[in-house]
Image (cartoon, rainbow, N blue to C red; front, side, top):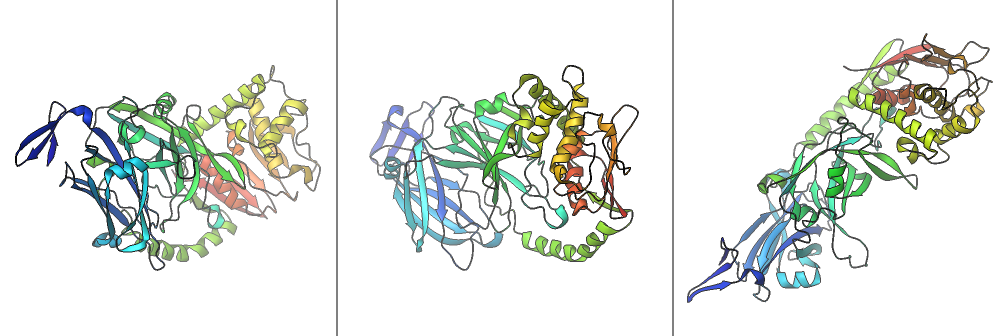
Length: 526
């Protein structure tokens, strides 16, 4: 058996004496694993273990991966570090187990493979012994490309994530988690880019602004010790059956993460990393990732990073059944609330720091766009057909009632928000004429029927009423920019309550709504 001595040499013990092998004859390597299971009847919650059973370091147990629940294609985050002498016949024994819902471990299969063969081919796929349909993928490469050592301690928060599961009445929320993957040095078999997952966060239930736990990861396993090495952060909507849906991703690096640390609280969208995802066939902004911490420190205990083979969701089935029962009991009540007089619907409140930063950031972005001539920040991610772009074009080319030289940015922002509402509600096709988008003050927008916009003495919109106009479409988030808004009164507007709830969860205030002669009060739980 071999061991590394304090002076960097390797001492190999033999019965006929000791042979010292110099440090320059050995490299440090890292091994990563993934698998594919073909099963018709069940999905495994699997983990893998690695031992060295041949060569200089035979007998060394390299440890186990984390357990990935309910997945037929597990991509384990755990990185194994090993040393071997080229030509010494180092053999790896890899076993894969099904944790059987967190109770007992059943061996799915295993294989033995020469480390030098994997290193030469970079990636090797081998069948597991118990079934030819179960395939194990092994990647072995040098651990260090750069020279940086130590651990990265990081803390990430999501903001304004695109909701993948609105559910009945728009009250549902996604359960986001994220993965960090590093770009592999060599292309895949098809010659394209390939990425290797090195960290996976826990999911957070029903939250579009998740504050994930802080974590730490060694620089060799995160980025090969090179701070500029490409990393991909991908956010998923958690699914208990393992069918997670991608919410968006961003390519970054440790160096960029350190340069993008939030400086204006935990909702600093100016510093945040923009997340891009596919929505109806287009690449659009689907949220932001705020880097709250990204500092490099000395190496820590690797056992605390990936945490063994505990299955987080061993009790999930019971929880799901309970949640389903509660939903069946509460569903009639929810339906009743949506049409009852003066009823109350409570939704989770986005932290006020998020709302404050949302308004300030939007004000900054609009000011930069109007004065610089190029769409900035929030405004940059919208398509030409979006209500936000139409409203911006109206404000800059058609609106005779505002000027960037005489109007304050807050006044312009109010006109912009009301214009977004107009276009989002298909205002060009309303049943009756109004003075919306006229050169008059926003406070005078309305019609001869008595509905329209109401303002306070400071000229700030406090409410608006629109009756029988054939409004259609979702209420835009920009309603939240009307910071003095107290009420919206809409009649004959389909699904008002559901869409209002989505807006309220963002802006952090209550809005009473009149719908077809009844009033539903929607407010935020303190």
